[in-house]
Image (cartoon, rainbow over all chains, first blue to last red; front, side):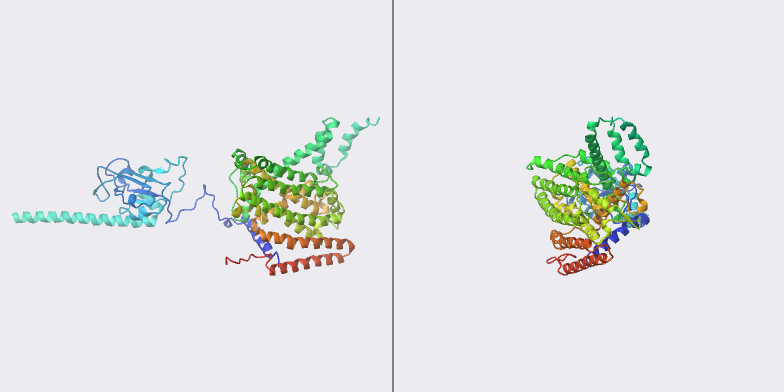
Length: 205
Length: 409
């Protein structure tokens, strides 16, 4: 019958109209600034630099001292839209393993250029750059305001654990393993030197 | 000698008016009272001006309210909350919208015909406002009680097409022009339907005066009113009137002239700021006035739905019916998808127009069959059979009904 579909459709919308006043779970939207949906594990917006709060070598503020980045510039070279700018330091400081490493004297990301591809994160051998979930980045200055420097990019490992718990746990385990291996190697080397010294001492006797 | 007894009689008569009638005639009495301060020579002019000012204030206020309720209603239909940021429950949204459209830059394209471009929204709003002049909004509440009120209304309604085409033509934009051509084609096609569906009412009442049409419906038997919608020909006429009115005011599902998926914004593509707001106002005012006319013609105008409710002021009934019609407009907008141009034209000329002509015949039959129950059966049967047969035939031939795609399948 002609018009049947219209009647059905009108009934459906009427059901929605009145239903939404009686059952709150019909309303699927969220009142954004006040209510928020927690971000997903795989959510990503722009990259940030991870720092370890425990690593205090080199002095300066916590974020500067603990930066994992060693200014190897792989991400800068791999970045497809070329939005990363790194200046290597002249001096070195100890990293989390206790090795002397360069650090970035300057590390800028232009988020107006960044395309959130995550390639910098994939290529980083030091787990130093990760993807952030912060998206409220609007600014009144579209040039300076969107060019983030080292300080703005640095975020603690604790924050990383909070936004990507599963991923951060994997990274932490891997780093702990590396540290354990490195420590064992150092210890083995030290033991070898000690044994050698003992042997030469014995020989001498 | 004659003027002597007049001053004491005037207030005495007002005291005699019962409260019910006083509330019913509230605005009329208010107007008389305000005008009575002026010298007698100026009173008629001042009275008319006062009524004009009232119309020009009330309907835009209603428009402001409708925009926010429409957005909230559409939100609810789509399981959203709708605007709720500005003021309590978002009720001050129209104020924010108004400030925004007032402060926006008024852009006139360089190659546009500046004068016509400027005039188009003004002509539209003025033509739409003229329609309100003949609508009886309550007992004795009509600005000009023309003997040919209906004719005047349709003349004014038809001149909105001119404004639409002025806007489209003067913008010098292909989208505007296409939108305007569509609008004019659509409005003229549905104007025919609108007129023919109203003609049945004129046939029955024998008058083009809208006040007489309402009076003809303001009778009750067994407590029920004699509204024309409760007769077979009136019901069919009202359905066709409603469809034509939706098309006439460019409302969804007949909003092709501003189909944003094809035409950006149709004939008002090149309008911004307050001129755009005027188009928007014109569209809603046209909706109010056409709903008001539909109410007057088929829903008994200002008369109460039950004889026991006649104590409620007549203007309350008129505006209740008006707002209910607006609610249905919004409801349809939230439900139905936009038609295609050929479907729109086929629907107007091949389905509604024959039904309208048949309805005229049925209305004639209704008068000649006398007042028994037989005329109810015969008239209803003819209309239902025609509707079913034509609907079935047209749907089978694919002229109207579900969309079919020849190439994109």
